[in-house]
Amino acid sequence: MDNRLTAEEIALARASLDYALANGAQKVRVTLNKSLMELFGMLNGELDKVTHALDRSLQFSLFVDGRFGGFSTNRLERKEVEAFLLGAIDTVRTLEPDPARDLPAPERTAKDAGTGNELDLYDPVCETLTADTRREMAIGTAAWSRKAELEKGFTLVSEEGEYSDSVFDSVVMDSNGLFARHTETSFEIGYEVTVEDAEGNRFSSYWWDATPRLEAILPSLASCSETAIRRAAAQISPQDHPGGKCTIVVDSECASKFLTPVLNALNGYSVQQKNTFLLDKVGQRVFSEHLTVLDCPRSRGETGSRLYDSEGVATTEFPIIDKGVPTRYFINTYIAGKTGMAPTIEDATRPKVLPWGGCKTRDDVLRKVGKGIFITGFNGGNSNTTTGDFSYGIEGFAFEDGRITHPVREMLVTGNFFDLWNNLLLVADDARLCMSKLIPTLAFRNTDVNA
Picture 1: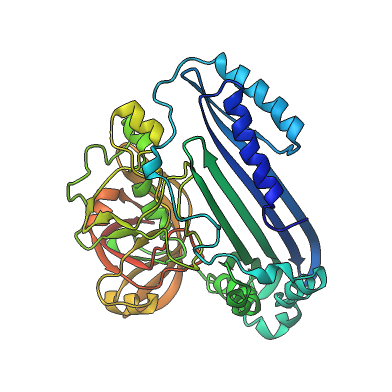
Picture 2: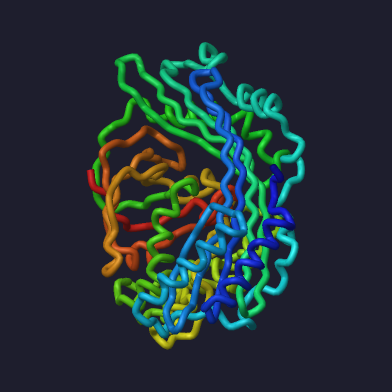
């Protein structure tokens, strides 16, 4: 089986588009996806599972007599696809008219995504990897055989990890002439571990990494499990810590917890339903002038980059939030038709919080801040999409004089996103490239942390 889409598979997608047009659809969008994943799982130093997963699908957006329906099939034989489409078109005719549904205007769609590899996200080495090679790489990631030398004041109770590599290839085309392709590889490693202290208390943590190129993941293959073990062991001997207003530093690994609700609040569906704390806030400075978030969807060779969204609309680099000012909502073609608002892009593709304050790393931030709570993870809680209020359980460490002093436990961080982001103190320059949102270590002043 070919790793990527074949000419025959793409020809089937094109033929299915033409078939739908010839049999009652006035407009059609077809998305052809193909993914292949090889996964090797480790448990306590031994190979525990092997997974080979291949998935192919055709997705259809059908516009029939002023009505709309979305359909999907993984049976990619021409006769079966044609029979599927006839049934789908008949089904759409039974639905209520929806005049807001439409394809994006051709001038808005991507014109520079013809090969799929314009962003250099495909590593051909995936075609040369054998099962034995993958097995050896996976076994080499485990630290279990060295547990005796790693155990210093704790016992390693369990170590569970996975190495995987995958290929994803996608084509989207529509009856307005769109043809766009995206091809990428991903090499991933992840470990979850549990350690036990001398009193029998257990602490768990994880670490992971992902890159489009094999050579870039090799250092993480060797260190991932040990990093997870160090993170778990660092939680031993947590102490109660007084609550109150304080400065918090949020690790880049989990900082999306504070930015994602802001991005969601700019989503067109939330705006259309008036279920957002950023309603009517575009063009106003509502956050700190030190907060600038760029969408960087076209960065070559970096995970998460895309030349177009699911409608085929071309991505561009632009400031989502410019010095505290939200610049636009994310409005797809449907929401534009419902609200009369101008269409943009359907969502943030690869948001990046720009550094501010002169700190490169987490340690730089801790030293500059001096004293507070360093948050390394969230455990439960919620936020209100309409008001922006939030309450999250946190885990992490107290720090003083720029140095971590002890783990903390059973604490909550509460507040409102307007207040939080207006108290932005520092933004480091250490975002992890493996993450879809490039959010570095953040520091906020005057934040409520409750014991």
